[in-house]
Image 1 (cartoon, rainbow, N blue to C red):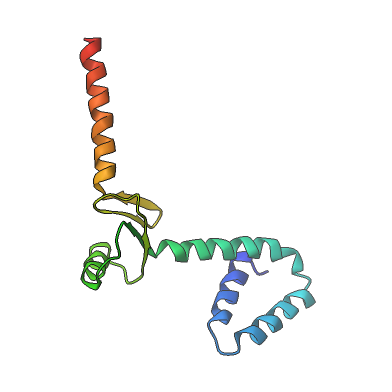
Image 2 (cartoon, one colour):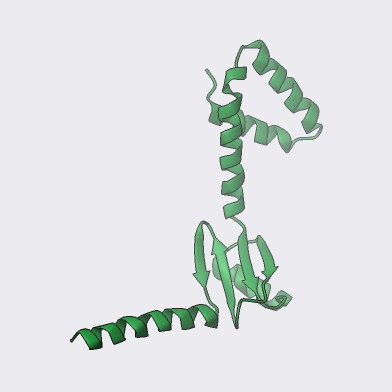
Length: 130
């Protein structure tokens, strides 16, 4: 019995081969012949998980200005990744925000100022409470 995970992994491998479309179609016909079409919704879910996992390997860098090639190479080394996607956002002030493997790394001055404001607010509350 083939699991949805195994079928999804086979489909991913087939998609990377020459003439992938015809190979995938033959594979799907074979699944139908074996009365395994009931597993297609779970295979779809598994393919979506694989896609999200692959996307997590992409480092997303959001900055207010386009990065230079030097900056991109330094960031790639810092995160030990080969794949970087850059987004320009005018609301990011001095620095960048990084999204990698499901985590957010804030490096902008704007974020640091927000954190400082929270700390000062907490500190002032403690002073007034004492």
